[in-house]
Image (cartoon, rainbow over all chains, first blue to last red):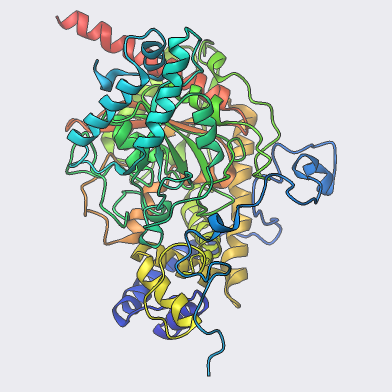
Length: 112
Length: 489
């Protein structure tokens, strides 16, 4: 077994998830089953294979250019309201669970 | 007027020629939804006010005798992962239960600019994570062709709405097969363009390097029409490609004789349902009869696609879903003791089991000590999968295979075994990882009457060829059926 209850607690903490004891037990089982399956990737020798994070840097770019010049079309001037106006303040706050009318409100950040 | 028979063109012409007003057409669809959707569950939210305003605009145009735009007055549905200003958007999650977006998704705006009437938002697996629609936090979608079966996922609501005649066309999203697989299971057409072909702006992010928006329609021609409407560079999405959009309607008028289609042997191995195999093989035979050259090919890394996908997609998801913290929008757990307590309980109560599982898997794969073994390894295998396709496309124009290894399965059949559910995506995930376009087109039914889909994959930015093949096949099959019916009567 690769993943233990302790690992699940640690990863849940990283992911800001609060899992119940029952959820943790199920998670240990599911993660181990999925990771066992994922382990078949180790059958492949990838020592000399470059990693690929996305396809948009390989296709549809200006092949004649190099580096960031390949994406010249995606670049715009860094100016205020470059693409559109920012949302009005009220609209930006309208979905917030709690505000004081100006800022988002959250519980105390400093814990003691 | 039989709403189940309408295509985009027939609906637009009916409005244009004043056989029916766009307003009356929208109302007819709402009545049908009210009557027929309860046992199916395709819609989460109806946008009646927005729809009727748009319908009135189209009616005003038609009254003046002016030509309507391509989708003028056509009732459509939008998967609830695309934000709509003023219309609740949930992504199928409790964490966004009351979220009313302050802006619109580019693809939706482009549909409306072309005259489409947005009837409402369709049900889906939570954050588009699932292959059966059973992961919706609200209610599952049932397959209109057999209510005991799943419609596929994650765009199951969009597929079911089109299949049941509760929308003429719909938008869905595809990260690992979520347009093509439900299209296959519900017996409609589902098209995913090349990565970057359609702007993702306003699409609630699942895995940003894999997410696509695309149409679910009743015909290939309708899919071409919708793609033409939503495709093209959008400054709001830096990954939308600066590649000219050809007229896809031109594609479907061209003969397919002489085209080379590749049949990947790895897509016909163990796990493929015999009825699906028979239907797909007979579709390939049909394409051969139309003059396509059928070539056996190999995509040798196919068996590594699912494990690669479930590392890459979950890693990206774990990062994308970090934004749901109960601060700026969405659900917040009550009476938090501290900020971190609020984050944790908000996310525990707001997310469903599958979303948590994927966040956990992705966080694990990115965590210190495991990054190289999982995430970096998967990124490298993604390169190998891409090379498989590049090699294949040196000799063939398109790849033809099944969309899904099985027809629609029963609700509850796989919902307790995440790995079994993930294996449904075995023929669809690779196109997302590699970024090539794909279409699923109906190719028959099982003996019990459930649809089967044929998948056609193309080169990067060559949606033209797959639409051409899918359209030729769709019509050849219809013609065959017509001839067969004539002979037996």
